[in-house]
Length: 217
Image 1 (cartoon, helix red, strand yellow):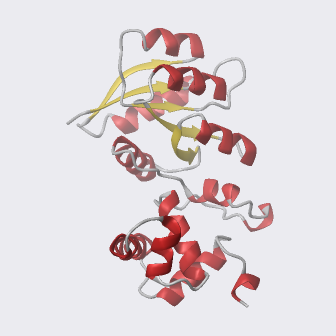
Image 2: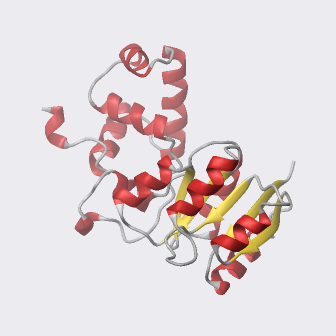
């Protein structure tokens, strides 16, 4: 089954770069590209993408309002944001306006393709730097690279509760999911992060600011 995409990006070179990356996947079909909001809305009059890849942080071309306008008309369209914006408030507002996944413009080809595949399934894909911003980590400890951390918001919640010492049953009760679902999430989390124990998971939570060290005292 093909994944239909519209690229909403003001910069020509970035549009072409994205098209080049996406064209390597046979199941990905770029329906159209737009350099501003007017072009995007016009394209949506006769094209129905599964995903819009957008940088909302482009004054006079695209904004969060662009996403809000599209999402009000069609809540089935998924947004993958690829942006240079580092404003925590903007990122939260973009999520509220319909953004499902977030990358920075420093992310690599593999991460872009992984994000497309996850987003097409309705799964959140948020890169490492965006997670740092969401968790409000100090800028001086941000990683220099953009390592892929393909974790959903639910998985981040489970990591946090696990680090606080809650059992699988307690996590399930708090998040209104079954104990079996908690174990399944933990198994997937450890596989994604390539770790083998709960203690390593706690260290990961501390390192990445998901929980402060003093909360474990």
